[in-house]
Image 1 (cartoon, helix red, strand yellow):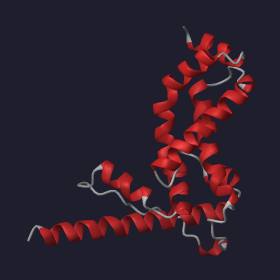
Image 2 (cartoon, rainbow, N blue to C red):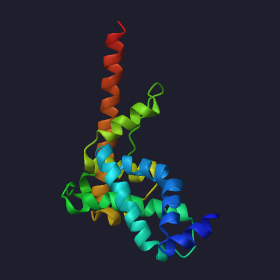
Image 3 (cartoon, rainbow, N blue to C red):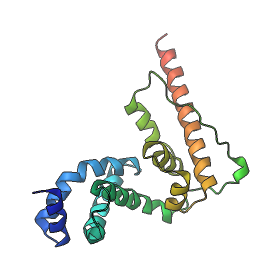
Image 4 (cartoon, one colour):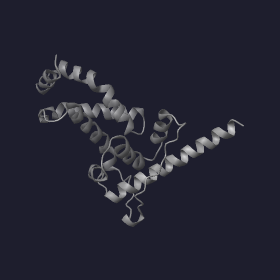
Length: 180
């Protein structure tokens, strides 16, 4: 069955088609949920909620743009809804923000290790870092998605990068001490 036919069957509330759609996209969408969740269990909940929303709103998909992109947007928004209700963001003065990039990637740091460090960031830093660095959203888009100011988005990104840089430096220092 083609993806287009699968979508049409899902629009008719065909549970078999919904199961097939879930099998087809659940692993990709789960990886997105992991990026935006505090832990594995919350990622599972976010995936479940995202699919409920997808099946509820699939009628709204009008075959304009990528279906996978539409699924991704719903999944990210579902995961972010938890944070919109909480006050996890600090309001900052735009004058405090340095718009400089801090290089955080080391040549001898594995991607898995870096992703684990990102997962350990405070929610407000992790969300902005993931949206900006990993998913390519602009600060304007992030501000709209999270109901924060552009300055707060920039500040949280800078703080996330500083935190990651410190974690990498600490890791390298610890590793070099152990090798002595």
